[in-house]
Length: 115
Length: 111
Image (cartoon, rainbow over all chains, first blue to last red):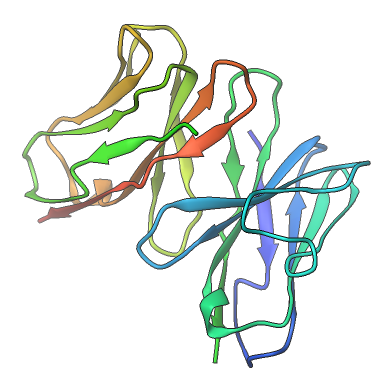
């Protein structure tokens, strides 16, 4: 397993600004993921962030809007750029520590409200 | 594109009742996970099933993977208010290329 922390836990931001969310893991992991969860909904994968390579984005998500950094095996950031109210959501990072089944461990999430 | 469906979408029951939540797909999965998410928290992994027909128990929770590895169920015996949450199934395709979450079942157990 892995213990994951996220900062900030919540924020209220104005339209047009950007917010950077940090994700810290207590152990070195290769595979890290960023998800969005809209109110009352399931999880939607934004991108996969592996250390040493560019993040891989899912359909509907682009690097200009959601730039990701992965400077080492224990840390990643997701920036939500030029925010609009539609970006109001919970943003979650997760890791897959092992090489077996696709088990993921999640951070507590960052609740973002854009006004 | 692989899709996972879950039923029911919402479930509200009294403490002490039993319930079953279903996760279905038309695709084969090499593994399937169940997560529980409580308000203000990230999803927490409950179990992983890998073998068709596999049954795993976690206290009052029983998980089953279908023989064809296309579906799974979660049965809770004598539900308690602490079981309240969003239950998510998630599957990895047979090639290890894709991982998808179901839409979730929101369970409320009333005291």
